[in-house]
Image (tube, rainbow, N blue to C red; front, top):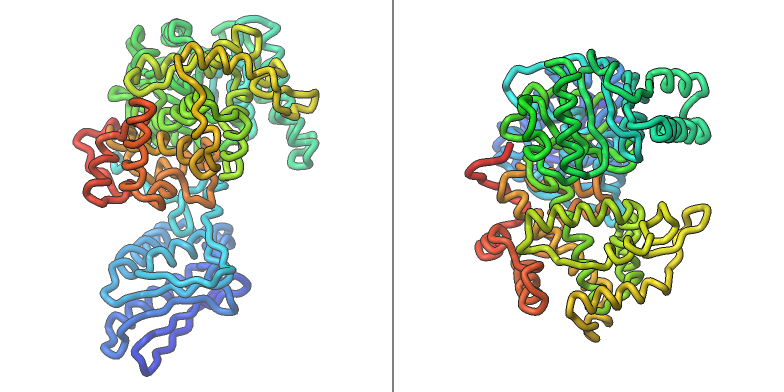
Length: 572
């Protein structure tokens, strides 16, 4: 028996009203989609129909794809996928008669996609719109993942055993994500103390799930049995993939990759979790350039949904396909990006902390900045984030950017001064904030002396005007340089489209999802406004704020920043 239907009425004014009926939320079952397709084909043929209004019955537009159709094995069938795409692109978007979505209640997932494909939309003030599937690691595609990333005909190879080098915060998080998806893991450390600490972190991650009631004790033990801790490469002879997750030191990573080439089988994928370092630099002393790929997880790796897959000009397409399959298996949302210092996500966000440091040197209060940024919707401000990441990592990362992009970096000594005084961030209970036993952060008046010293070293004075800056201007001074760098990422072909950066900013950096992502938010301000504002700041504060050529061109031509990019030579 069919599930759901649509009803169509044509008024004397020539407007066809099409209503989705599939209680309780008007889900888009295969039958509903088929009915919609037939309705639209009919109205396109009829001379008495001039326009279409699409809505949902009983005060709800549509709650999205019908989950039960997945359970029945039909929601992701080729027939339904092709019908969904044909309906959205050819019939709705490509229809020669105007189509308006009248939204009340909810328009979620596929329901929102259908509304967006209409030529116009009108909504009640109480309607809820969203793409909840993004939180599940699913790219919107009206009922499932959008069909294949390429037409190369490659199929993923079986990855049955993964080696991880380093059991710190990142390595243990990656190991947790893998064993939770029934993946065998070999965790290597340099000594027994570090190894026991790494295994302990994995156990703590799993025990947290048991405590919350999301994992049984039996499943806890089963997952832990998939983890083996080692101190050498003896068990790496049959691994299918290795993920290096050690500290950000180029020479150390180079030595590790030279060792991996000796001990791992010829088919083994050699992945690095580096957040910043150019992959060509890491693998320059190996002969296996085609197997080297970036697998950049975001902290905490077993929770954050984004996986940034970084390919060089030499990375084999098969390796990328294999890593995409691993990402899907462990419930991550992957984006494939090109290779450069910082890749796509961290590179576009490196000005986030640097602009905050510039503002502090110029007199703005650390805690006022963090407060304005969290009020905007970020989970934490740049200084609370620096404490969480740790000053050691932050300072090493800043040095990488200074080497790669010296003409537009702001050189601040503030974190290095604090690091030299044994302030390392949350791990030492002292950073920009003080931390108690429960990791509760409180402001620390003592940081004033470090700020004063940093200001003197920078040769600048506190600016009374900046000290009075309202929250809106603080947000823009922090985020417009991020937008500017994102423009360069697109211009260079590191990322192919702005929507990838929107998803990455939300899933990797915690950019508020209700603002639509970094580039979507930027287009709400407009390229002309952003360009003019950055130009003014550049005159006062230097090249750190200088607008990119991509931004200047789009501002001059009135083209949205999120509009498609015509790359001469994409890094992908």
